[in-house]
Image (spheres, rainbow, N blue to C red):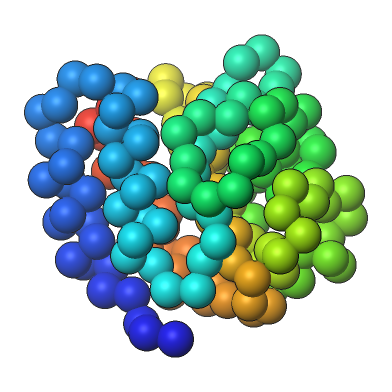
Length: 151
């Protein structure tokens, strides 16, 4: 597996969305950038908060669950706890929602606006233990960029 250059990824992401006022298009481009840049992943995208649920937003990968309740699965847990979830083995995660049976590990990072969780970045991999603390820090930095530019 090749190591991700998160400084380069942040620079590319910033150039894609900086000054562009189209929210959905920006998230679509970011999901495509992540899917193309990150090694050994099979899904990259966003879920956006609507009431007590997360609703599927722009993504790359196989079709996915459309609604996820807060507190349910990895995405719902990240939203409910307002904390990044780095899951080395999704099959060991209580209440995991299997949208793609090929997924074996996952990372989900909350997105914020006005002090509340307004969505999550969700990335899945067919490789167990795919995501590291370095990935966590890099993706949290990406989400901070998204928050500054889009929310």
